[in-house]
Amino acid sequence: MLSMAISSSCWLLKQRLVVGFLFVIVVTGINPLANGCFTSVFSFGDSLMDTGNLLEISLSESKKLPPSAFSPNGRTFFHRPTGRRCDGRLVIDFLAEANIGIHDLNTDISLGDELNSFKDLLPSLCSTSSDCKMLLRNSLIVMGEIGGNDYRHAFEQGIKVEKIRQLVPLVVDVVASAINELVELGAVTFLVPGGFPIGCSPDLLTKFQGSNKDKYDPSTACLTWLNQFSEHHNELLRKELGKLRNHHPDINIVYANYYNTTMRFYHSPKQFGFKETLKACCGTGGPYSYNSSRSCGYPPLKSSCNNPSSYISWDGMHYTEAANKWLANAVFQELMKAVTCVPH
Image (cartoon, rainbow, N blue to C red; front, side, top):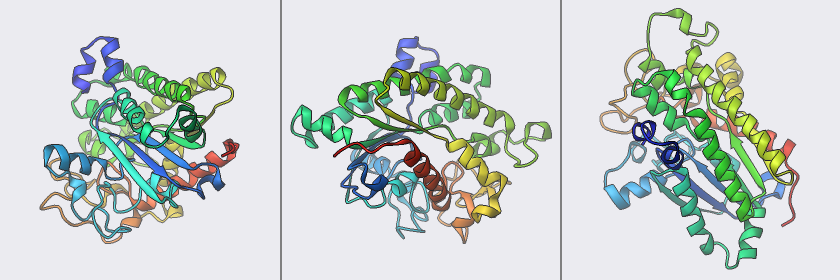
């Protein structure tokens, strides 16, 4: 975990960084995706990308159900809880909307361990080394968003921002190492999302709520210094992706600008149909409708706002289906501009 990583050696930090509900999602049989470019999607990410993996592992290991197992999660699209921390679909659901089957792996482990699990999974999807290379060649690898949990946990623990900034190069290095390893396995197309504007997230707005108006963006009411941290992460990530492109000129590496896309919601909410920008739809307490001790889904918090599509935030940390849909549309357009289809 992060508290352990901060006091550990760089080697250990690189091995264990990027923890907190990291998931592998394998979506197979997606012919329409990206105009037929890809037959599969392999997604590595955190709870913002989790389609139900935490629920599955909780049932098999701890027997304690997470908040995503309870209503009103899933109310908009699925009409029942599915393990998604959302009222409906996630970005990955929209990117793979025409999927035939979803096979999930997950555990609360480092990205390195997750890659090992992925490699263990491969033999069940392809019979020979050449078949596996072809599978990965025809697949879209979604690498992220990565690092959000590490940063969020550190901020919630009260660690100084200067100390947390020291983690950013290490997070970026972990992402780059994972991409290099997947390239060795045969992957050629990567979608790498940047970080979100965490200064607009109800959970952190609640954590750092104060009277100093200078710390807030007057046009959005988001915390400027937290958003600057997100921009710092994204800047280092983009630079590293540029190095990877130079090192692998035949590999497609597309940066998904989650930050700029999401900030458009906060600057022009009416354009996207949003009425509440900084309040959680499924939440309670304070100006941001967020209370860390009363997670959405856990009794007695079993209700949510009347119209989730008018909210950006679902539960104070995750987005509504409406926000995810807008975000996925923007990401898809970026992907299509940058990617040349590989032969199946």
